[in-house]
Image 1 (cartoon, rainbow, N blue to C red):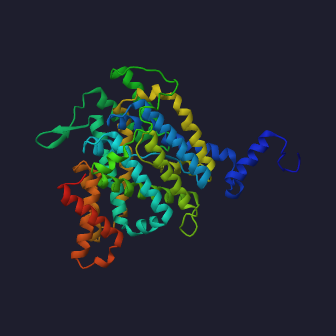
Image 2: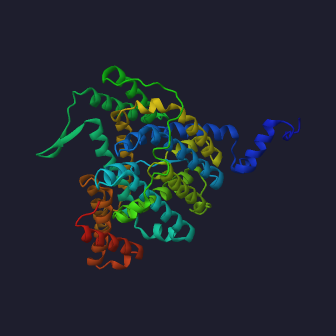
Image 3: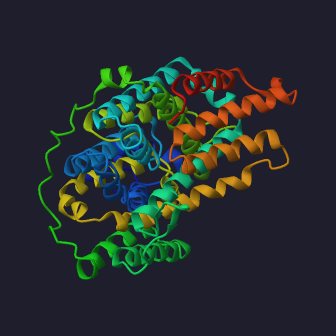
Length: 449
């Protein structure tokens, strides 16, 4: 045809027409090719999660193969819902920090079963859904001081850092000083250091798949220098049965996990909202500093949290790595739908994921931790009633090996400082409620996790 209109008789045009109607590509000034390439870019920057998440949750006693399948499926499902329902170029997957909290605090630290931990994730998702449907989300997000939001992000980064350094063998336990330098002669530790240098150098050079390249390179070297055994690359997906519907909701409610559920809820809420706003801002999708379909995006996120708990993985959240796809021109949900399709394809690479050792994923964890620390510059250091609670929150997370403890004491100290300095009016009601709940749990248990 010469007039530039689509020919409805040809299958490609029909497909293009369907995609146009679904994602409104022309309205957003983009094309199918641009959106697909943006989706590929986003996927490459976040594909490391299919190796890292099974590695972390396996330490909680969860079957690694089933977690791998759950990770791929929930990332695909969450991203697809975000793309089709909210029409945003934002991908979802199990969150870094939240998976560490699941394993190292809830299971290893508090001694709960991973089934009860999945139950806690399910309940936190229910709370997330409830505040989204009722409009309470805006009140909670607006009521939490910016300094505490920053502190939670930085604290999780520090928590990830100490886990990464431990898994890499860079730090080790010491009876005299609690932690000390590990054995740098071990091949695993040397490979982890090399992996971090790869991540740092490639990221500085703007290579999209820096984290994935580091993980695969260290894994390849581990077969030669660290005695790793090759298990193949491609195979049919492992069974999901060991984790599917294995969550223990009654156990989560009866075993004193309410404090943990509150922390999961708060972190999921801030993480999702902050990431959505940040990526949307880069894409120029904000209207008067507001996200037009924010509730739809948060609904997609809460649905993914539900699905993850049912399939068998820790909390799912929006990924900041989606910004890489936005920089490549992604503007609609077709970008997220492309990411979903690629995560489905990942299901057939389970043997490769099973061969990835913890010291190969440690550099990626440490690099993510480094990026999270940059939020510190946004603190108002001249206002000690804001800066001190933020520092307490961030520092206590790694030093008590508990995200919940840092959050709990941070909110309590924030409220107390404001009260004793005559600035109680600056504290929003939601902060008083959270501080009282955490204080009650602290007094009741003698310690918070």
